Length: 251
Image 1 (cartoon, one colour):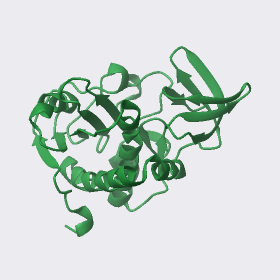
Image 2 (cartoon, helix red, strand yellow):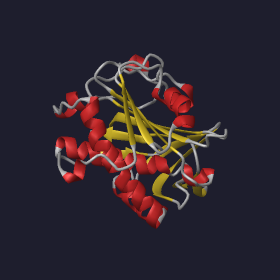
Image 3 (cartoon, helix red, strand yellow):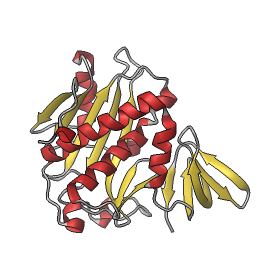
Image 4 (cartoon, one colour):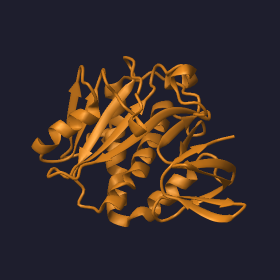
């Protein structure tokens, strides 16, 4: 293994044959951990995605959670979804040797040939553990069928079907963990500015018209940038709109 792929110092690595959910396991393990740790589940029986949605996780796909205790306010902790997205993008490029098929979709998806190949879920604890869990799911070998995703959502695809690249979950983790550590170090040292710039350089549909849904409100406009808090900035018929949280739909 090259120095570039050396496992990050001080970071735990736990590989479980079967787990209900790596996010749930992260919450269970957090009180006993002395430092950050990755938890990889080779099979999940109760995986979940954003807003409590089920996450389909067939054997051979990637489901892992990084649990950590950053000494940051909640709004700064939330910016690690962009750190994780950049690490995922780098990992895909390393695995396939190609950058052009991959793009980042606000707020927390990775696209391959315009379809969803990976998702990120952040959960923070307000309890005494004070931990942050960053859950990552990747369709390495198979993807859900169209009837298993929300209406209007992007079509899911697998890395194998789209690129022919075959990688095990353990191999994927051994590339992802060092990539995350590098982007996290940049975030800790220089703040969100360089992360924001790097994310936008890989953003899907930047400069194009998209539909963003935030709660019960929908906004159609041209996606021009992220602000310094990670909010999506659209130019709409009513002017400039900042959307701090929500979902984006492509026409």
